[in-house]
Amino acid sequence: MDSKMILNNGNLKATPQRIKILSLLGDYGHLTIERIYSELKKDTPTISLSTVYSNIESLSEKNIVKEVPISRQKEAYELNSGAHAHHVCRQCGKITDIEIDSAKLGESVKFREEAKIDSVDIIFNGVCNNCHKRVKK
Ligand SMILES: [Zn+2]
Ligand SMILES: [Zn+2]
Image (cartoon, rainbow, N blue to C red; front, side):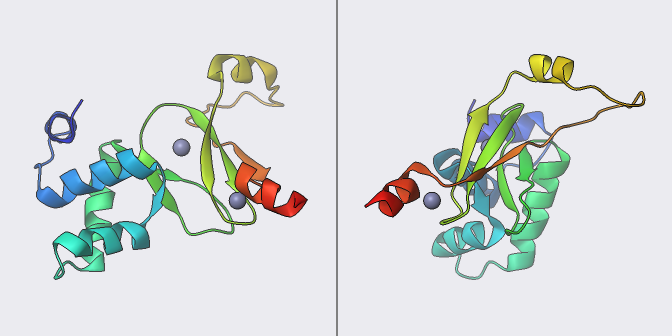
């Protein structure tokens, strides 16, 4: 689906900024607000950080974009691509998607009390391949 259609489905106006944000996230996977801001500035030097924030906010409200919850790091955003876990490199901060079987995962967890689950965020911490190679040398 192209960005315009995604925005139309979410009843959001397909502004050039929103289209650009979606294509950036499509290209890079996970980006911080600062990074999105500096990329958008290349096309629109007058754009303000608060405009970027409000765009991200409306995209998040429509579940088009999702915040990647990573402690000890600035929040990053990604396209909402369904349930998956993340691997975060403690050396360079690189975020990698990891596929998970959410049905199996749900079965494997035992709750002490009956609880309603809305979402699960799983972070694997470690080093990425690149940093691992660098350390070994
Ligand atoms: Zn790394
Ligand atoms: Zn992800």
